[in-house]
Length: 206
Image (cartoon, rainbow, N blue to C red; front, side, top):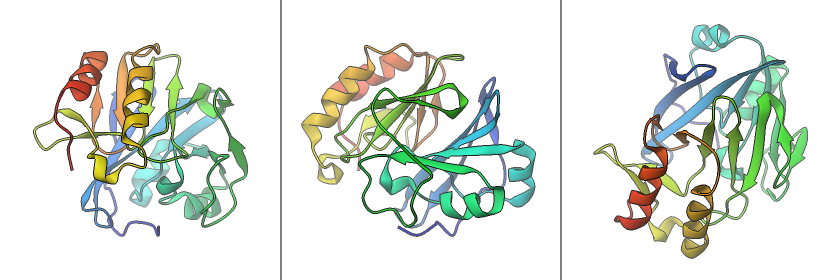
C-alpha cells in the first residue's frame, strides 16, 4: 500500500521519551498514528507516517524505523532514503515494497530498547512492541480508538483471524506496561489494562 498523501504538521509528547503524530489516512478513511522513541543511539520511529519536514527534523537523529506489521510500511522507504535509517520489519512479511534492512521475530530486541511480541489476529505478521522504561506497549491493528475515545477491538470483518486477535489482547494483559499506544488512535496513559478489558468485553468497531 502506497504512502498516505496527508501530512501531519505537529508532534505531541505521550510520556517522557515517547512522541506521537497522527493523520486521517485517506487510504483507509480512518486515523493512523506513528510514534518516535528516544533511545541511546538516536530516535526510533514506529510505523512512520508523513510528517512536515520541520517537525521531522525536530525529532532528532532518526537511526531506525520499526514496522509492527506489513501493512504499516507507510513512509518507511522514503524516510530510509532521506534519513539513512535502517528499516526493521517482521520476518513473516512477504509483500514489502522494498526489502527491509533487518527482519525480526517474536522476542527479538530492537533499537530504542524495544522488544517484539508476536500478537497475530488482525493480520498474520503483527507484533506488539514493548518498551521497558517507560513501560509502553505499541499495538498494531487489532485495537482501535472509537470516535467516542474508547478502545475497541477492530471489527471481525477486517480481521484475518478474530479469535486469534482476542487471544493476542488477552496475552497483552499478562505483559508489563502502563501506557497503551495505538497504531489507529491515541495513547492511553492511565488505566491501560482496564481499557484492554473493556475492549474485550465491549462491541467491535469498524
